[in-house]
Amino acid sequence: MKNLFLLIAILSVSLVSAQAFIGQNDNKFQVGANFQDNGSGINISYDYGIGENISIGLSSTYLLGVDDALKNNMIDDLNAGFDSRFDVRVRFNANLGNVINVDENFDIYPGLSLGLKNFGGHLGARYFFTSGFGIYTELNVPLAKYKTENLTAPETLHNQFTLNLGASFNI
Image (spheres, one colour):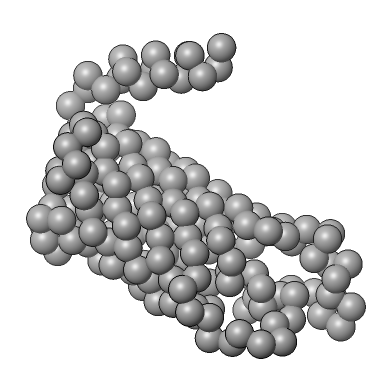
C-alpha cells in the first residue's frame, strides 16, 4: 500500500516542471543519511555543472553512530575518533539524465571521487518534484584504499560500500 501511494505521488508530481541537471553553472546541494556497515551518519554534497553533462563537487560524511558490533571488535581502538568518523571528497560526475532521457526531472550520475580515506566510485540518481526540491540516492564503493593491510576497526569506516539517501536542492 505504501509503495502504491509513493508511485501515485511521484507520477502526479512529475507533471510539475523541473529539471534535474541543466548543465553548465548548475548548482546542486544535497543532504541526507549515510548507511554503512557498523555505522550511520549524515552526508552533504555540492555539485557544480561545468559542462552539458559534467559536474564537479565536494562530498562529506560524518558518522554519528558507530554500532556496538564495531565497538566490541575494537579492543585496542575503543573509540572511533573524529578522524575515523569524518571523510571529505572531491568528486567528478557524468550527468546522464538527458542522455538516457527517462524524464527531465530525473538524472543519473556515475562518477569518481578522491577522499581522505580512498579513491572511489559512485552511482547516484536524483529526481526533482519541483524546480528546487528533489530526492537523491548514491551508492559508493572504494576502488583503491590508501591503506590495505592491517586495518583497524575505525579505519574500515568509509572504506567500504556505502549508501546515501536524502533531499536534493537547486541553489
